[in-house]
Amino acid sequence: MARPLRLSFEHAVYHITARGNRRENIFFSDQDKGIFLDKLNETFEKYSFLCYAYCLMDNHYHLFVKTLLPNITEGMHYLNTSYSNWFKARHKIVGVIFQGRYKSILVDEVAYGMWLSTYIHLNPIRAHIVDNVKNYKWSSFLDYIGRKKSVERLDTEYILSNFDNNINKAKREYERYVLENVLMDNPLKESYKGIALGGKVFIEKIKEKIKRVGRKREIGVTKLSVSRTPEEILTVIQEEFAIGKKDIFQKQKGNMYRQLALYFMKKYTSLSLKDIGDLFMMDYAAVSQACKRYEEKTKKDGKALKMKIVAEENLKKKEVMSSVDRLS
Image (cartoon, rainbow, N blue to C red; front, side, top):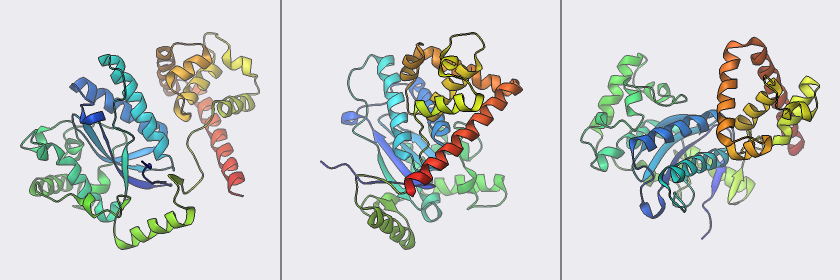
């Protein structure tokens, strides 16, 4: 069976779902859902996603996200793989967790954002889990009405701005709107061939993108990618600080080049923690801890912060240059 068509481009907005294999649960407990949110935060930060809404159900999840870069495939692969690995280890499960790859539909957030976020938040009602959406804590609805803050890169203001300029009034109006639309139809039924959901102009633009690049199974409309290779990371650090590769890999207390390389490998490459650990001859848990310590260090140590900023700028410049080369 052919894989579904996927379009990826800067500032693309998607509705995403992923279900458990054979419709089995992907969450057995609140702890599982909490860990998934941690993975979600990590993915959004690593791949520069914004989130408009989410809902976690026992055997599937919904995301309403915006990608600032054309990297939806990389980001979703990272999310599902990292959670699957944790879930299988935690529950001693062998085999696949998710039913194939995730499903995605491009969304015109201007025309359908308010409607789609409402539909996502009403999932627990339709599944007869709760009788009031305010009683379900595993969606972004409580974020919208000001009851909690669950995901760092969750943007509620975009949708709320449709209701009132006063944020508190907007929250109340949004709550009323959701509660009044419990029986709403599924807006995704109006999508164009399961690829895009939007008004006529939006759909025509998507058709043009498909026509322009050809009907490939994976389409990158632009060339810029957030993911770097390990060699690119090492090269940037060597060039920026005039050091050799051995200086980066040297196991010495306080080696800031090594710390920076570990942090960049985790943040800017598609390598798993285990892969990074293998490269630096470390346990994957030690990699995670080292990255967290380095991130905290940059908040207190001016030298560490300056090194990070300078190296990141160099990394960005190289990415832009390589993108120009590919397009020329």
